[in-house]
Length: 203
Image (cartoon, rainbow, N blue to C red):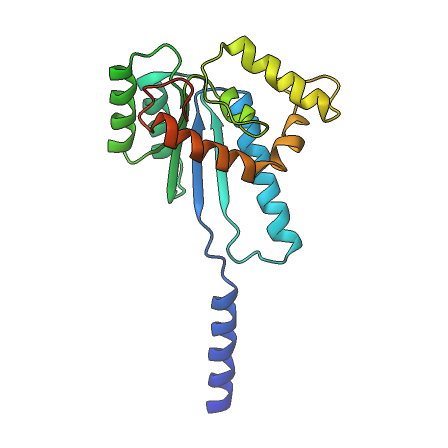
C-alpha cells in the first residue's frame, strides 16, 4: 500500500514538472496591418524555434490585436479587450506612432498608458522607422515616403522584387534575420536622440 501511494506521488510530481509555465503577452497596436503582421511573424518564429528545440515548457503565449485606433481611444480599446478576456496577461504592450501629436500630448499619452499598466513601444514618426533600422542606422529626419523608398531599395537589393508592401509577410523574412542589427541601431539612436520622443527620428 505504501509503495502504491509513493508511485502516485512520484507520478504527480512528474506531471507537475511538465506543466507549462507560459507567460502571456498582449500586444495592441495602433495599426491594423504592418505592426500586427510584424509581431505575428515574430510570435510564429519564437513558437517555431522553441518547438523545434523541444523547449515547450516555457513557451510564451501571445495575443496580438491590430486595434486601428489612435491616442486615448487606443488605450481605452486595449483596456476593454483586456477586461473582456479571461486570460491573465503578464505583459501588456501598446504600439503606436507619434505622428502629428505635440510633444506634450505624446508624453501625456505615454504616461496615461503606463498608469493603466501598459508598457509602451513607440516610433517617431512612424513604424517604418523601426523596419528601416533593420537595414541601416538612421538619425536624420525623413518623410514617410522616404521611409518607404528606403525599404523598397533595401528589400529589392536583397531579392524581394516587389519591395515594401504593408500586407506582404515576405518582408519579415528579411527583417527577422536582422533583429540583432535593429536592436543595436535602436540603442545607438536612443543614445543620440534620447528616449522622450522629442526628436525625429527616435524610437
